[in-house]
Image 1 (tube, rainbow, N blue to C red):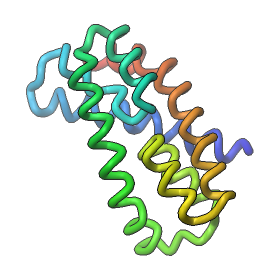
Image 2 (image 1 turned 90 degrees about the horizontal axis):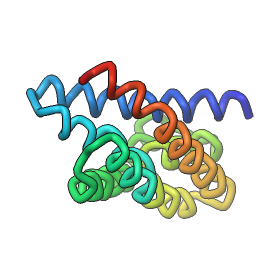
Image 3 (image 1 turned 180 degrees about the vertical axis):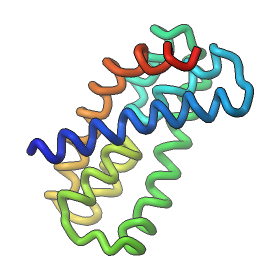
Amino acid sequence: MLLIAVSVSSGAIAAIITSAGLARLLGLNAQMMETLAPRSATTPIALAVSDMLGGLPTITAVATLITGLLGMIVGPLIVRWCRIRSPIARGVLFGTSAHSAGVSKAFEYGPITGSVAGIAMLLTAFVTLCAAPWIVSLFV
């Protein structure tokens, strides 16, 4: 259980850092950084975090939707290329990276994968809610 929590937390933090870092690298303003940082959390949490940070929730919603769709498309390729056979590892992959769209895709692999993806999605949302303000402040 600890390994799952550490993996999901690391993935959520990595998503925030890469979003904020990429926004900074591309020369986007602070508001866009605040808008894109929570994109890997499930939509309601991402919108709340974006609003709390001073971002634009409408753009956050679009970025979150794109993240989920890409996770549904790329996730199975990663599972195949990396030969991920563990239902728990698959669930962590989909739940952490693609939120509710990933959970839906994970249930195609089986009930354990789907259930773990749901737990991973919730933990990702919690970590994003707690960590995004701190991480974004480092980039702004």
